[in-house]
Amino acid sequence: MQFTRRQLFAAAAPLVVPASVRGQNPPSSRLTIGFIGTGNNGYGYLTPFMKDPRVRVVAVCDVNREGPGYWNGTVRGWAPAKRLVDEFYGDEGCAVFTDYREMLQRRDIDAVYLGTPDHWHALNTIHAARAGKHIYGQKPLSLTVRDGRRMADAVANAKVVWQTGSQQRSDVYMRRAVELVRNGAIGKVHTVRVGLPGGTPDFGRTAEQHQTVPVPDGFDFNFWLGPAPDAPYSPARVGVNYRWVRDYSGGQLTDWGAHHIDIAQLGLDTQTSGPVHIRNARGQFAKHPVYNTATDFYFECEYESGVKMIVGNKERGGVRFEGADGWVWTNRGRLETSSPGIAAASLPASGFRLPYSRDHEKNFTDAVLHGVPVVAPIEEAHRTITIAHLGNIALEVGRDLRWDPRRETILNDDAAARLLDRPYRRPWNPEG
Image 1 (cartoon, one colour):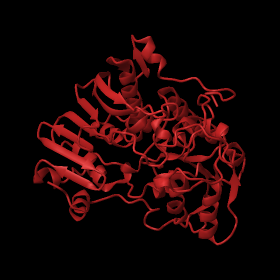
Image 2 (spheres, rainbow, N blue to C red):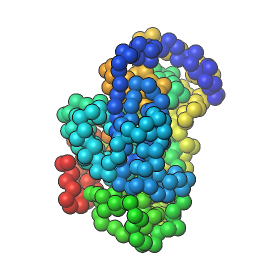
Image 3 (tube, rainbow, N blue to C red):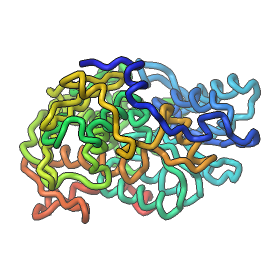
């Protein structure tokens, strides 16, 4: 059964709505924010934040002044971002930086948006947290398991607000699916199927531009590489397609695993833990002069409870929870169940409810200004992306893994355990 939006809202009622959503914000409340990384998602998220009257974007930062290679071949960088911000506010007040550490020194900035490639997330987060900035950080959280732990610890120690850009946690259909499962609507869960995309789509329209060429004027490629290994410049390597290079990202497995594995973890109530075994990993890797992430993949996760989670690009896209009394499947904007009774089930008055959110960016602003809970905290994002990283490690070493989610280590396999971290290129330091 597919659920309509009207039916979904009716079944989910009553909802607890925080005062900030009911328009009770103090009129003087204003969150000042700087954007670090204005290429792919960074540029795209400027407008949603600017449309909130409680927010003012005051600065943008990128190592690229302006150039192609982003979503659908579009041109982005700090110059287009500044033009967008200044045009929206009708002035020229948006400051520009190419070194994010200089932006972090500004005391008039309350928060930062992190839209950099994955290999930069850890250092960006550590430095921002130490500067006392609240952080909206894009997914996937980290490049490695150890980086994720460093990030989560830095945020916790600094006591700043963090929202992961896993916006599916604010999707009403996915929230309903999780609440149905957590309240026993399908009985005891035994299997979860997570379907992710495969391949290395040419989002930036640069895949064929893999030959080494001079670095474009206005692009600090050495800074873009940052802690990653030194490499020759080619358009295929940067822009939106960076995610197909393992030095900078984990391919579709981390890019989409950060979304769908996240919902699976939430539905299983394992969002601060994880599986104990990774089994039967198999896949294929890109055959390209630059791209080398997995294009076809499958692996199984076994939890201490005996629940099995299957992750693969041949599974139906989204998340399917299978229980003793039926199943629930969800994807963005969709919810299906094995019977009408499950879809229309009323949740117990004292049953499990997720923290309220129907707008991911506003939830972050509410958290900073009014102390409401964020719906995508960093510890849970770390646990989610850890599973994707373990899948990639199992694919690389070609054998099953035993994982200890309490100590966050791979057991009895030193070679695999070494892949939980990566060396940083000098002068960058993994401790920030």
